[in-house]
Image 1 (cartoon, rainbow, N blue to C red):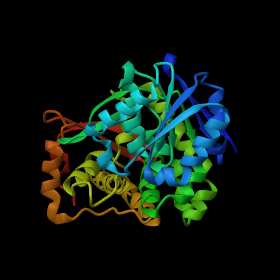
Image 2: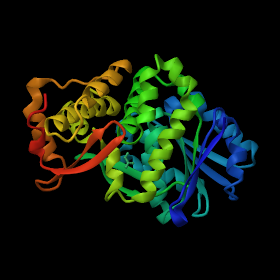
Image 3: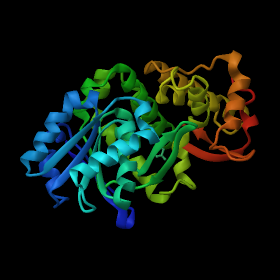
Image 4: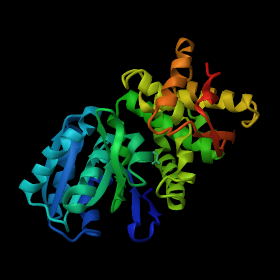
Length: 354
Ligand code: GLY
C-alpha cells in the first residue's frame, strides 16, 4: 500500500513517499512537484547496475533531460576531494539554480549529493531516492548532509532539506545481507527509543523474508518517528539527539576498528546493548532491558559484545571524539523499551563497559 508522510518544517517542508515499485514511475511523480527541464542524478556503480536505467528511462519518459554521474561505491567516495569532480560535471551539464539533483543510493550518495546540492550555485533543489535500508529509515530524512575530511567523518556539512524523498522498498531485494543487517540495527533503535510496539513486533519476526513482508509498515513507522523528532528539533540541539542511542559507544567501536571491522548498524547494536547494561547499573534503565536488547540483536544476527581487552581504549576514543567537546558528554539512555532520555555525563561513564 502506498504511504505518504509530510515533514512539516515551514518553508522547508516536504513529503516522503513510500511505495513498492515507485521507482518505475518516478518520472511522473517528479513531474507533479518540479516544472524544470534538467535533472542531474548522482549514484554509485552498484546502484546504477540495478536501478540506473530504470530511473533514467522513467525520468526521460516524463520529458526530463537527464545526466547521470556514477561514482565508486563506499565511504571513500564521501570525501571532500570528490566534490570538484561533481561540480565540474554539473557545470558541463549547465544545471541552473532552478533545476534539480537526484541522489540515488545509500547514505554515502545521499549525504554527498545532498551536500553538493546545498552548495552548488549556493543551493539547488534535490530529491532523495534512498536505496539501502539504513538510508530509507534514517539518513535520507531530516536534511543532514555532509562530506568527510581526512581527519574524520562528516566534518563538513549542513542542514539542507530535500524537496521530497521517494522510498521504494522493492530495491531492498538486491541489498547484500551485511547492508540489510546494518539497516536493521537502526530499525531496532527506533523501537528502543520511541516505540515498544515496533520493538515487540520486530522480535517476533523470524527471518528476512518475514521482515520483507512487513517492510512498508516498518519503514513507515521508522520514518514517522524520525519525522516527529526532526520537526521538534531540526538542528539537533535537543530531542533529535535521542536518535543517537547506541551511537557514542558505536562510533567509538567504528573508530577503534578504523571503520573496517563493524558496519555502522552493527557498531550501534553493540552500543545499544552495552549502554543499557551501564544504564541498569546506574539505576536509570529498568533491569531486564539489556537482556531484551540482546535477544532482539541475536534474532537479527547483530553483534552485541565488546572485546574486553580494548575497553579502556574505547573510553579514550570516546574522550577524544571531536563530537564530545570538553569533558561533558550527552548520552542517550533508555528508561524502558520505547522510552529514552538525554543524560548529561562524562566519558568516564563508560569505564565499566565490558
Ligand atoms: N541520523 C541521526 C540524525 O539524523 O539526526
